[in-house]
Length: 253
Ligand code: NAD
Ligand code: ZN
Image (cartoon, rainbow, N blue to C red; front, top):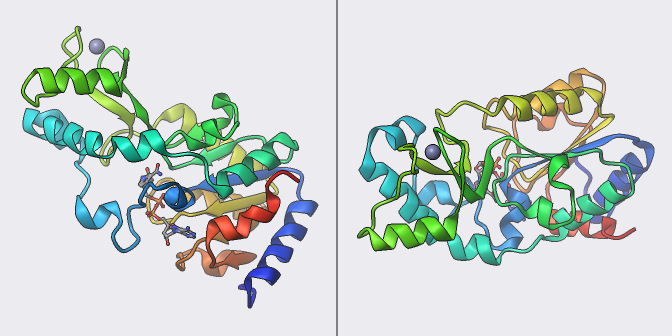
């Protein structure tokens, strides 16, 4: 069901939220565009500029690792400056009200944590780009340290002291999904009574399987996204407006 206007959409959403005991927000890049971080698939999004580097290419070639880091440093200003938007703040309000046990996100920008949701309650399906880890020994590195090393070595990415490759703590295409996060997301999707998909084109699998899972387990499905998604027909409420405008009324009350 797609309400005719924003006001009706907000009041429909308000009713569904009021009636729910266990809301699972499932967020994608669209919740962070107002924070200055471009999404992948909107016009002008990252996807149209740089196709992502698959994990196998990262592992196979030093040039690809250098290129991957070069791209990451180019985005550093956007990530470092970004602050939670209205969508993040609304979800944090519902979390503090006890309506939201955890947030499942495809985002890698750390903004749910910054908005006040405890790190253990942010289930990151695609990892986090605000720090790096060694792929062999899991040692953690700051992006700023990697940048210093990169510049000092004539634009070559450093390796870990153990010899492993250092990569942002994100999940690349072709890289295994984090098993614990996937399992937790599944449990949350199956036990929620309202699944709130926000700002995701819902095309990246296996992450896109969660709305379906929730719906099959009896949850009400709400999709808030500017563009249509493949799951709109399944949803109980589809809101095709700006996320910040839709969720702003839920901040702090
Ligand atoms: P996506 O780019 O595929 O889809 C984003 C969707 O959000 C689009 O359908 C777009 O129409 C919508 N949208 C954008 N701004 C909006 C707004 N203000 N209001 C309403 N709708 C808006 O994003 P995805 O589904 O999350 O998949 C992309 C993958 O890329 C993610 O899995 C993530 O790992 C990664 N990514 C993350 C970030 C981030 O962390 N902020 C940014 C870009 C990409
Ligand atoms: Zn190491």
